[in-house]
View 1 (spheres, rainbow over the protein chains, first blue to last red):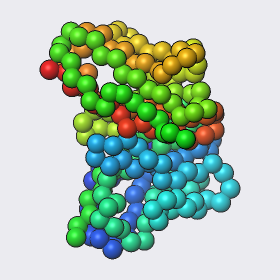
View 2 (view 1 turned 135 degrees about the vertical axis):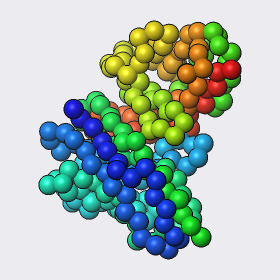
View 3 (view 1 turned 30 degrees about the horizontal axis):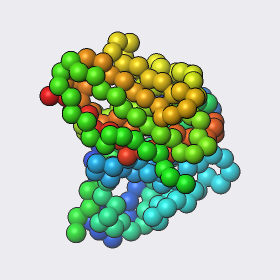
Length: 111
Length: 113
């Protein structure tokens, strides 16, 4: 069955440290892939997306993600985390009319 | 271009009452999705609609829940005879067509007392 997994429920990093959030998908072909961020009490905001082409995609707020077909992964990275990055991060995939979201990873940032 | 709008932002209902959640998609968007988010959980797909049509309602409970997206006006998610377990945040998302990302509204937080 098609699914998106995010192995880390909760990650804590220090401000200024690098960040990598993991995402794996299960689908027979290459889907469209997305990362969204949700601040407390807010809706979801799109960080970046992968449709095709260059496997390293740049997003807003200094985030990037790399698509690796061999690993069915689409990990999100940021070289230096800011306190304002503390939020919930969701990986999602789209195939046809269907959207599937991962369970989310909560990011905490230590001062 | 205004984003996806949802109202009300907060809704309190007593058990047994009806809840009506509204979603106005972005201008030019004809595809609407509804999701439910329980506390500390991810998004669960409920229903996908295009104008005047329900395309996929596989994520919606068979009873008490219904959704519509009329030719004119917002999309409506209706929950009849609410129960405590319906308390959640309900998000609407829209997109212009297939192959595009979704744009999310701010959500409606339903509390059933």
